[in-house]
Image (cartoon, rainbow, N blue to C red; front, top):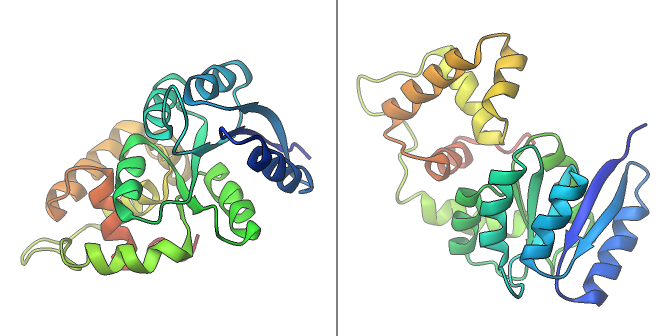
Amino acid sequence: MNKLRVVLADDHPIIRKGLRLLVNEQADMEVVGEADNGREAIAVAQRLHPDVVVMDVSMPELNGLKATEKLKELCPETKILTLTRHSDDGYLQQLLQAGSSGYVLKQSNPDELVRAIHAVANGQIYLDPAVVKTVVNKIGRHVPRSLPPGKQLSGREEEVLHLIAQGYLSKEVAARLRISIKTVEAHKANGMEKMGMKNRIDLVRYAMLQGWLQDI
């Protein structure tokens, strides 16, 4: 069995040691590299091409948000899991927009991190249960729960948007649905336009309200 290859990026050695012990005691994952700042995280990920980078937000030289944006440009196949003490949904929105696939609080049960690594490695979005309720309550005031009158998503549009919201890349959606990438992009664009959504954050918000992320 191939193990999930994980890189840890956190500027506190004690925290990295604890994370390393937690990850390495899992039968199906292992820590292959570490970094103590954002720039080093990018360099290590470029060199090792891990499946998942567990990224702290507050780090010297280059913070986790900027490092996430850059890393997604350089290593788009690597999934980034944000690990932070910040429960404010403002951080969550910025990080999802930057390309993070998951958001876990450091104060949560260690099992949350393990579940999150598995989820993002499988191409899904993972949000710590501790922040989901707060986020849903806030976004519920800004995102419609249903489509505008006279507009209806087709079955294929909903399938595509469902998978995109979970974090799958267009080429992965194409493979799962056995359609072309161009067709995926067309369905995505049409569905987003019908819903009045402009970006991934809008789609994830809508998906949370629809319960699309509850089964992952």
